Length: 240
Length: 216
Image 1 (tube, each protein chain N blue to C red):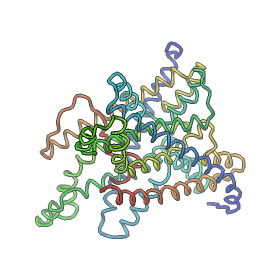
Image 2: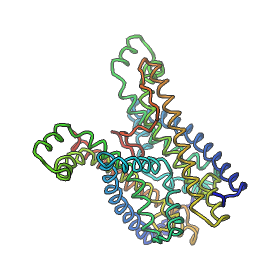
Image 3: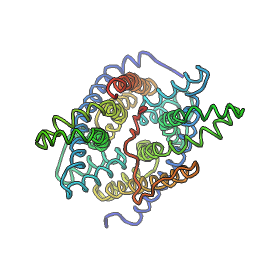
Image 4: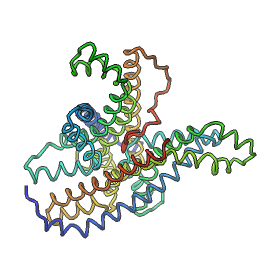
């Protein structure tokens, strides 16, 4: 690794910071979209379900990279809206992964036993109270493992922004490659960086899952080595 | 918003060229992913131990790192090691390898779902190991997971635009080139975006139907 000078290392580490920021902001937007659309897809009014379903199919159907190109190049020309590259990227990633996440929310909410809602009605809770106090606390622990998968997919998706010139890890790598004239060291290093970031996310989500399950009286067996849940189908991830 | 239908008409010949390349990459990548994934799944289940853990480590690593960076790695690093491949072949290998780490998990779930009695029956009938896999376990496992595999093909379709970064002229590459030559950016990217939805939506409806029929 001696070919990568300290200055170039600094470039890569700045890229890590950008990637982390992108992941956090996109995940926040994605979570908001996932809950909004996911709950709307189970709404009692058909028009709300229809609009949310259309959103889901459109944003799941298109590719995150194409959406990013569209937001970068078509929005400014077609509508006169020019976004800062960083926020355009967050918008594209958040909207796409939010659509995947809405399926997770919908599935988990639908899986809460019907009697729970009926109990809420019997106690004359308003629909909002039922959702907040009964349904979501029980659905939430079920959402965490698939959300973890999506979060890792999102982290991987952030690499796309380098094509748009946002200075993330992958962008830093191309600069380092140009500076050193060697590809193997720098690309190996950044693959490892992404892997470590993914491992950190997975570990964090395992902790979150254990807390959430403990919160509703379910025990989670301790595991020494955290890993992403394996049975679920993540991106592309239709309902299973 | 200016929308020019004649620009769409101008873009069409290039679009179909790009569509063809996208579909080629998709089909070849999917075949590679199905084949490699099966190899990983079988090795992880019944391979010799010294082989098993490197395969587990590599698949875990590939699954948790971005395809885009893997494509750059293959495209820039392989030539340094003396392996020169065309952009298209590199793209197919990248897609296939990345998705094989997902399909191997799908196969694994399918294999785990085959009842233990099937293995015992194969032993009782004195079938060889190869025969047990090929005529007892895999036919049952693959039937069960076919829709999940199909969903990964759809996911892979949505990742094919990435291979334009290494110079494969698929749909997005064509749109970019067309936009930079004619400045008809709006039309070119919108057509490609709609094309993805038009392919992916019926495909996912098909997979859901398949799931209802096969997974019982």
